[in-house]
Length: 550
Image (cartoon, rainbow, N blue to C red; front, side):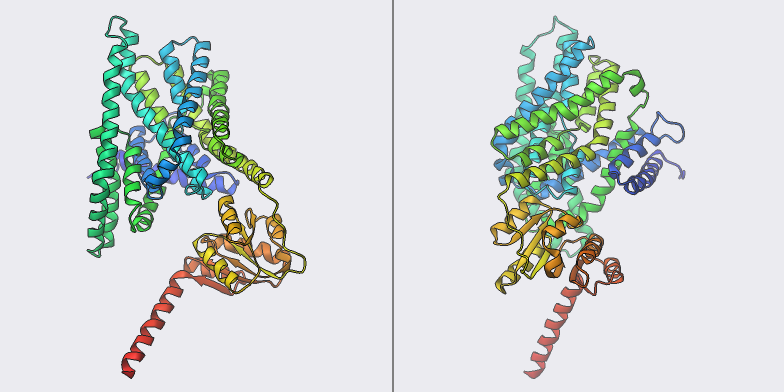
């Protein structure tokens, strides 16, 4: 067996380059996504040196899309999907139409045909699954109302693109052969596509909701973790492949429905944990594969058309989405989050442009502009999202009713994080009449804390101003309930700079995090696994003593 194979070389080159560029990006305080894209350019065909296999990279990236959408489906329910249909369906349709018209206008100015302009505009209208979900996941927004709207919007876009991929060959045949059957030939493909999508959804809701949970529960009872992990991957990849090959539905949409069905079972959390490492690894390969498509010379050959393309993607789409969400009655924070989420394009755009170019109805210039526009918009997206997220937080502060700061004489506890652990802590402190101020970066969780009767501050506890707003200088103790132990250490250092000697209790998830926090002088560190072991041992010993006394 030869030691060198294109598959191994592509995986190794992609991951190694992504690691170094991602680490460099983090060092420069830039999103690691930017580093992954640069890594793709480095191993791509348009730069000197090693060239990875772009076809293999794209197929590996598709696995990342499948696993990512499966993970989103695990946290999404049919109820959530139905709850956002009134905004996601009309919003996505209007936004797609707006971006398509803008793209057609640019194509007209460049002298392209009507169908070329339509395909070009359509490719600019659909956001990347991976980029959107990564932006939401980094900021813990997937399970918020804003996140559900953005994901629902994405699902509608995918369905529209599935229909477009079916119709494009028909439209191309009409454009290239005016003597063909004409518009009457469109009706049958549309009907077949609708029936296939409906059949897939019905199969998943009626049959999948019974078979998938039953199969996974059977695997759990075997006691094999390895078999459980294999079953989860088989369900994700199997349903995605089946939806594509049998029903002509996208891989991503099939994986989403598989995850959504599984998400209604008690095993959803464990399934999410088992697929997380693979999701992260293949998501990185997705960004590397995108970077491999970028030809830097496009910037010199077509600077103005490229600028216009990027403007449509990052500004035109975002303004359309913002206006639609605001007109629908949602707050500015929600509108700005959705707008920022959609300010990029990705995998479906590549599929559309490849199909259009292969059918001979899309010029090579359009292909280059779409690929370059995708690279630049994905590169800019983390910065744009961070900026808009900051503006959204400011808007939320303006829209929210004023919350009285803790009084100067109040001696209270500051709690960082209002997730599952934080809520239990807050509830216990309230029952003991202990004054409490919550710090939470997620505005919706901050609102939940206020509804539960607690004073709360929205923001990142690493920000000095947020700690001051929570009255850290008058606090008796600081409880850090977020799951990131290393972030907890940084928060503790900031807090002690403002309130020397404050008592701190932090949460950790690994021995490394415990050691790190202890080195920082935090003596009270709680590691969940240790506490569980201690409690189980205590109960076991108590049971043995009772048995002996009997």
